[in-house]
Length: 80
Image (tube, rainbow, N blue to C red; front, side, top):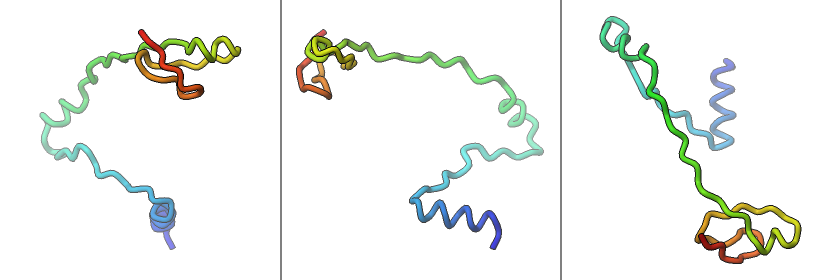
């Protein structure tokens, strides 16, 4: 049994699905290869503002909550 076949069996048992290739380029097409070699544009990370839950903080715990949501530990709503 080949290692590729074993790998596929293990992935199937674990319920892991192999994703298809996203870009299939023709190696003879120079334009496509030039585009693929261009650096990717910068991406900006967008962070979610967080607040410490005042109820958990009073107990000595630090639990971060998205403003307007309830604390996952104690259920207290955390406002803006």
